[in-house]
Length: 99
Image (tube, rainbow, N blue to C red):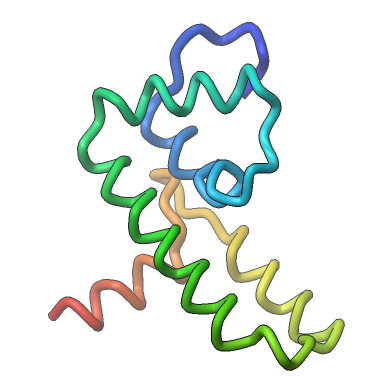
């Protein structure tokens, strides 16, 4: 998202959600995402899921650092984006666990 965009759509919000959850956005982008979340229940639910996921990973992995290869693999999978803007790896896992 550029800093000039007044509104953020769902695909932008979902794409940048972990950046938001991790507090790595500019103040302007943080505000734009926060405004989007105030009116979008599905994205707000995604934010809640991402927060819980982050907490679980942080608790589970706090004592053992990931190898550089594992980090690269994780980042590659996280940034795999479908045509509709969703995360393909995460979506596949959620559909399996929800079914």
